[in-house]
Image: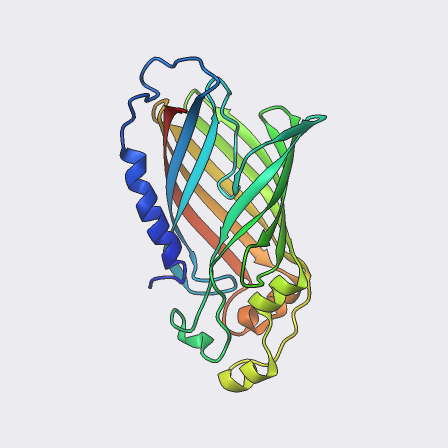
Length: 274
């Protein structure tokens, strides 16, 4: 089954060839110290998980990733469900900056059980992140707040707590709980059912979803460094829908409140100058 995140898979497919391209200033070569030199990391992930948020059906999808830092800056530990960010400010040890992400969608074209219900379009979102390391390079607290850029898909706020544990010279393990909140616009779009939709569907009742706590969960990951330029990561992200998200017939009748995603990511880093 192909998920409604086909557009994301195609984006990943376009990203993956870039990962394998060489660079005249690759990491394997002698690095030149310059303020105009950057380390770019491109990644491509393959995931197996719910076809849409609240679904009980599983499918494959793809996701690109991107990171960059100045030459000489140490790479910072991150979790697989972090969105793309860039730290602009450091206030008392709290790093703050912009963050962007991707949201999946759903339609009756992908799942026949959604017939009669409105589609949810895939979307880009953008906002602000903040993170703090109570224990440097080990314990991290992070929050992201992101607003959909079009389509009226609403606001999300995700809270992360992660422990990072190096094992030997090449392995990095991480694990931590998750908590996600959403405003009323997001909840109505993703979990609400109007009276007209209920009548058209014939399988679910009308449901008014309100904003609040959306899910709780856990993310674990293991990253193996193949070389200074290459790394591979495997991960599992589990979340349990709660509140109106779990009570919605989208999850309780048609799908499941238990949402689990397993994935693997291949990363390629290289040096470029401007």
